[in-house]
Image: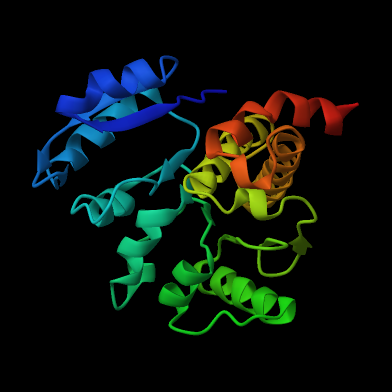
Length: 245
């Protein structure tokens, strides 16, 4: 198993990122007007070939970066697509053609991102949310994670409704933390078995459940109001002990 946690940074900020997350690798990339430029694609592909990560998480904190679509098309490893990765796709008329070919993908939109992808209201009832999540999976042949109260996880056929979590997770960075949970679990499950829709669905369901449980554990100490994304991540050891006992 190879699970490399890499942070894509602008060159001038490499040292700041490395100091904040010392266990992460950092990769300085070309930038233009404050965002990672299209010239970064070659460096990223070279990085992936050298370090051979099992899974790539694309989207958090990338803004409207021009490298994104070209990078996605060239990916040859399993992908978790979140945040600005989803937003970049939604701006394309035929966005499914921008997805990598031959690799499994987990999509993790919140309701607003889902609406932009499907050009349709997500709806307020759980039945409507399940319908939209299934629609995304049918369109992409991937696993969909529609975030929100009772997050929906589906491969288009099997549907899981997550029971954990709550208002403590409605904070900046919480979705990014979830993306990291799912990617890390998938790297382990896929390496132990196979990187396919089955391991993708299992990793997504487990990641969502653990993320919600971490939020609940953090809230018992900090209250719903005071939990931050970093507090959620810090509870992962306790959450694992809870589900494995």
